[in-house]
Length: 159
Image (cartoon, rainbow, N blue to C red):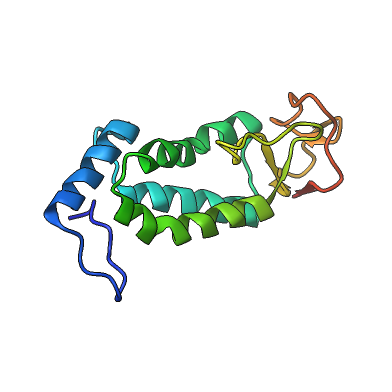
């Protein structure tokens, strides 16, 4: 089953009740994909990992698209509180690692306090990929100029 969470070697396998609770949590917190397929806990983690890797390598989309792409992390937050405690304990190290990697690959908005409940929000990738000769607005590549501040020096724009 794709919604199953693998158990670490030192843990007993999840019970049928725990698997059912995971499925119910993901169904209520994440719903279905655009093509109608249900999300699973593993697929939400995969989406978050894919986005983290993309941001680490250089994010090539615009600011509104990043906001949209962060949906997977927001969905994980909604699902997380509904998961059985043992599943949260098992998966917490993986989530913490991905969150830490995202924080390292991004910077916070200047002069804004971090949202303690959703710290992945209001962050900017350190590396933005762009097309050659693409215009700039206050140092930002196309699709980022709507941010209410000039491009911070910590953000590198690469072609």
